Image 1 (cartoon, rainbow, N blue to C red):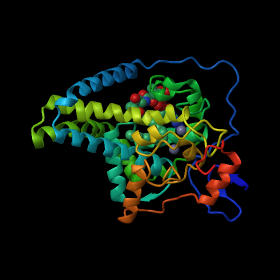
Image 2 (image 1 turned 120 degrees about the vertical axis):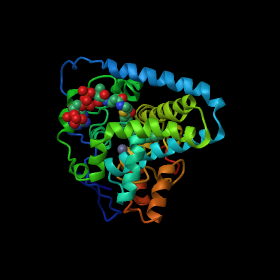
Image 3 (image 1 turned 180 degrees about the horizontal axis):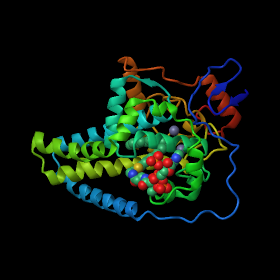
Image 4 (image 1 turned 180 degrees about the vertical axis):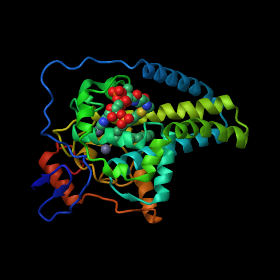
Length: 331
Ligand code: ST9
Ligand code: ZN
Ligand code: ZN
C-alpha cells in the first residue's frame, strides 16, 4: 500500500478508507536539526519553585486523604475526570487534531474542564502539541523525548524553549483555533478561569455542600488531584515515548503503554496515535482503557458531537505489516 502525506492532508490511497486532517499534526521528515552546539539551557526558577511547592502540597494532600469523607473522595474523582476530559477530549482530540466536531455547548464544557486542568490555555496547548507531532523527537519538539525521561516529563516546563520550537511553531497553520470563539475567550480569561475552576470550585464545593474542612478540600480535590492529573498527562510524553511496544510503526519512538492509557483515560496508545493522529479514538480498540472515546461516543449519541474520524481495519493491518515491529496482537 502506498501512502501520500502532505502538510494538510493524510490520504491513504488504493480506495481504502480515507481519513483526512486539515491540521498540521503529521510528522515532517524534511526538517533537519541545525548542526553545531545547542543553545544553553536557561532555567526558569519561578516554575521550578512553583512545581516543587505543588508537589509538596500534593504529598500533604496524600497524608490528609484517609481523613477525607466519601463524598470528598467522590468529588475528587469527578474533578479528575472533568479536568482530564478537558485535556483529552478537548485540547487534544478536538482542538489539536480536529478528530471530531463538537457543538457549542460541548466546547464550552470542554473549555471549562480545560481551565480546571490548568495545563496552559487551549490555544497554547494545541500549538505546542501540533509542533510535537510534526517535529517529534527533534529540537523543534517542545518535550523532545530524546532529551530523557525527566526533560520530556516535566523538565521542559522549567526551561526556556529551544528556539526551533518557536521558529517552527510560528509557521504552523492555527487559523482554526483563532476562529474558534470558545478557544479565544478561554485564552483571554485564562488566569481568572484557572483560579476559579482549578482551585476555588474544587475547594468550595465540599466545604459548602457537606461541611468538609477548607484545608482538606484545598489539598485533596485541589492540589492532589491537580498534581496527579498533571503527572498522568506528562507520562504520555515521557513513559509512552520510552516504554512499550511499537506494533504500527517501529521507526518512531512513541509506544503502546497500557498503564499510561489507564491513568490518562485513553491516551497511552501512543504508537497508534502518532501513526494515525486524526483517529478520534487514539486506538483501534474502541473504549478499552479509553474513557475519552466512550465520552465522545456518548456525545455523538446525544447529538452534541459529530463526524468522528477513524481508520479502517484494512488500513491499520496494512500499516502493521508494512512498518510494525511484529508485536501486534494479530501477529
Ligand atoms: C502543562 C502542559 O502541564 C502539559 C502538556 C502536555 C502535553 C501532552 C501531550 C500528550 C498527548 C495527550 C495526552 C493528554 C493526556 C491527559 C491526561 C489527563 C489525566 N509555536 O512558552 P513561552 C512563542 S502546563 C509558536 O513563554 P519560553 C509565542 O510567541 C502546567 N510560537 O516560551 C509565545 O508567546 P505567546 C502549568 C511559540 O519563554 C512566546 O514564544 N504551566 C511556541 O521559552 C513565549 O512562549 C506551567 O508549568 C510554539 N510552540 O518559556 C508553565 N511556543 O504564548 C508553562 C512559544 O504569548 N510554561 N512560542 O503567543 C512556561 O512557563 C513557559 O512556556 C516555559 C517556556 C518556561 C516552559
Ligand atoms: Zn507524543
Ligand atoms: Zn496528539
